[in-house]
Amino acid sequence: MYRTRTLVKTLIRASKNFRAVLVTGMRQVGKTTFLEKSSEAKRAYVTLDNPLDVTLAKEEPEFFFETHPAPVLIDEVQYAPELFRYVKMLVDTSKKKGLVWMTGSQQYNLMAGLTESLAGRVAVLDLLGFSLYEREGKGAMHKPFLPPNRPAGVLKKRSLAATYKIIWEGSYPEVAGSSREEWFLFYDSYLRTYLERDIRQLINIENEAAFLKFLSCAAARTAQELNLTDMARDAGIAPNTAKAWLSLLETSGIVYLLRPYHRNITKRLTKRPKLYFMDTGLCAYLTRWTSPETLEAGAMSGAFFETFVVQEILKSYCHNGRRPALYYYRDSNKVEIDLLLEEDGVFYPVEIKKTSNPAKSDIKAFKAFAAFEKTGCGSLICLTDKARPLEAGVNAISLWDM
Image (tube, rainbow, N blue to C red; front, side, top):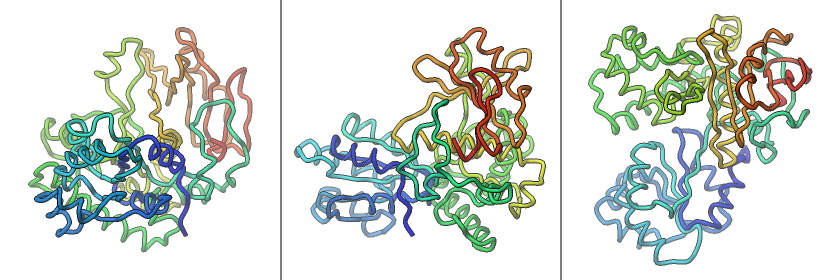
């Protein structure tokens, strides 16, 4: 059963204002299905996974568009960046909107081609895995997360066990509601495809085992401050190699790096970010948590809960066609805040804890930050059964009411 994606509203709006639209995202997040189900007009479809079509696109791009005339959906366009120049020619000679829809999985290569050929002519949208709203068929109701006015009761509240089953499964459409056997098969195949298709096209990795070990080291550090030196040591590789491979993980959408807040913007870019995996199912597979029950009871259960919440906040923005201004906060006195969401010069502090009994002590860092920045309503996202005020301007809210 197809679940409507929140991004569809932004896609239709973009297609009415731009002649070309590109949807990027990790493999298997449902980009092609999303575009096929969202098209309001009959549209030709061609995938560059097909060797014949990709050869035609690379060697005879002009004839490619004669064979596949607009309006057209081109899947996996990163395999033929030669097409971008001809897409530019096509959109520049027509006044029709939404002529070319494209999908792509490798953002670095894609952005390089777009910068050279299609800057200002293409709308670029990011599709991530299923959000909680999309899993429940309520994608149209998902709004960017911004306290305090969050709609309560839209999502069905789940037990702790059911919550961790969703976290363990991950957000790829193929594994939603899957069996344990299907879960293992999917992620094993996913890793093979990721290595063989995406990574090897971006960089020549001679030691595949070392890269997989590095990937597992990264997964074991989700929701932690990044320490590349430690990761390189544990993976048995050079620090420069670790830096290059981490860039690949970020480029291909496997990890997200959350930058630290600092009043000096330059220092936000130079200090260590926090690392988050963008799919908790893949993260669980790499760290060998073989069931939801062992994950929930294990040492990483809190880190996985935090990772999942960060993912949901990112999805709430990306799937509405926006990029959030997100940071984390840590000062010299080790005062920490998990997330700072900046909107119009106001910072909204967010703490994330796997607890059903929120307390004021959980948000004590908020006052320290409010002493030197303008802050809005604060939130403690946890497993409480209902929203609870913790102090003036700060509420504990359920994961299911985000």
